[in-house]
Length: 285
Image 1 (cartoon, one colour):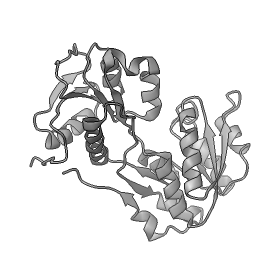
Image 2 (cartoon, helix red, strand yellow; image 1 turned 90 degrees about the horizontal axis):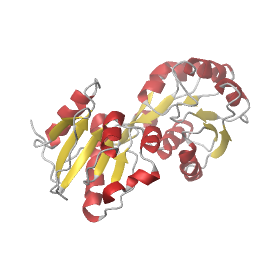
Image 3 (cartoon, helix red, strand yellow; image 1 turned 180 degrees about the vertical axis):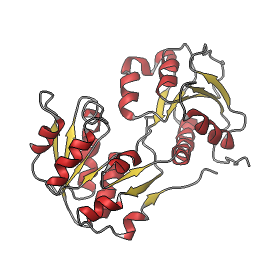
């Protein structure tokens, strides 16, 4: 059944997808429920401008974003399902307005503010929070400071020392009530996440993640966005594009919470029902 999108302006959409991505088919299936006339082009094919100011190119994933940024299209580009880290790496300031086009995004991950709200809902009191910042997450520093202030959290930010392991960097953080991981592949990888969690849990420090997968791997909780959440946030973004051609990238405004109940039990941290039900969600109409 096709969903009706009464909130969307009268744009047409061209989705650029990575043919090697296993998740692209699911994303396209849901996008076509909202936009039945969606055109689809593989990122390894020539991408040509359609010459219409009522067309928006959708970059589904990093490979598609890179292909679009390097193309000669003049239409606005909206990146979907690419993290802020990779978006910042691909879309340098010199390329944002190439051919006078807009390049913006709904990032794949939720915001630092959402994660700080999850932490506030977990403890229900002011807490101290430790965060490591690296080369690919330095752009999060100002937002982290704002979010921690909003939720009355004492924030300890520390730049990663690259000559030391991530575990050593964490040990050198001041003792805090919790640690928040940020999406930065120069700090956290699949190879070191287990060591990070073992180190912090031995000291009784809960760790909050930045995605559902980090919670499945052993962090206590995190805000995350589903495909539908990202699309709902995208509809809000294109309404802004309708009236403003200088639209900054955003984090999903729609998100929900996942909790690792076993970790909470092991750390003896009671999880309030209000945390389990915490969400900022809505369905695009």
